[in-house]
Length: 222
Length: 258
Image 1 (cartoon, helix red, strand yellow):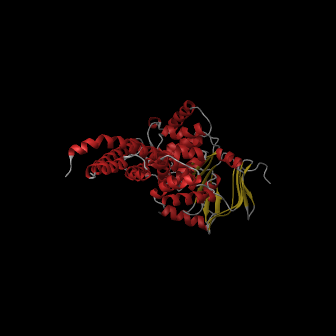
Image 2: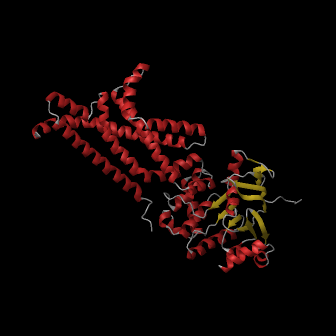
Image 3: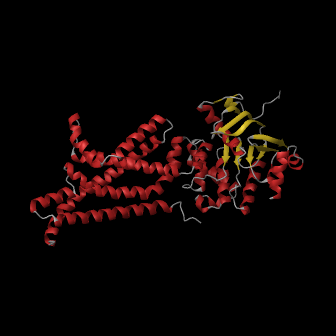
């Protein structure tokens, strides 16, 4: 059944491919974190046109599968003269898709900040920009870490989709090994285990971030 | 016709929330340096008066003026808001302390007090911190400079909030039920701080309060607001000893029999 020697022999190849998985996930997670901020702020804009257009975009992106978005960017865009590498396509699709999800988390976080905080900013003549930057956003970060962390883990597990546009990541390599050797059990199993390891690592990172950020000014309610 | 116009003036001010009229054609003049106590049943619109002055609420009709600056200019039926520059300039002259303190939870007491002087007035960090330390000493919290709000009692938090408002050197201080969220044993320390800063003079103070004893002792004048109107407006002794309006008498009886 399971051939450990074979599994060990393909491990270096898969481990190398896991680097791509790691890089794509963390890079697009970071981009999604950044992109989510303007999207969330635009949605709360005073001008209804801006907030409505942003809502439309966010809902559209959230309501279509990542795979469809990947295929559109990779196979349909060249028809309009835009040709992107597989990795670039993956980065754009993932950061856009999860940026929209992230903006929803930010929005919930922003709405959870007490109204009195805004009142205090007005009373102290603190500008809207400064209020967001130094007063409101720092209060949003801590409570949204768990939700954002969920998406990080989720994104790890979504990266096999990139194999379908020929990004050489773990799933792609596993399938390739399978096709070459007619043995699928070992590469897919190892691939799954590597995913498990990475997801556990990511979850640990998130918990560490929660502790780090939470300790400073929060304390258990009296 | 008065020789000098009052410092702060509300004229024919009407404010509605949806269908509900919270302030009804309100007239209220406050001379510079006065300590005015505003009392009244909950929902009577008394906090809204302060919030309008702090530019936190809009109005539907009337005029609001501070010094020679109109925040709102209008008549009994309409009102137009001042441009952003004037609004910002009026806002700079006013400080406000809230019922729920509204301290910034992620900042220490020192940072809470110095944030606006640094960001808004462009003070250096050193100058702002030095001023914050002075203010903390004044409100009796020198040892709490580095404490986060969650680690302070309600009374301590409110004293930091008062220091924070004073750090912007306001001409007018608005106190919106500043002791209502406090445990009874913590009310005194906050009122003492208010006494102290008022005794230094210069500030015009509008305070919405349920502390009748404090209003009587502290204020130059007491206003009773009910249903969005000024029902009674008198010096403290006359207000509490011989109120002229029946609604005032009913209210005071209800409060003192409680």
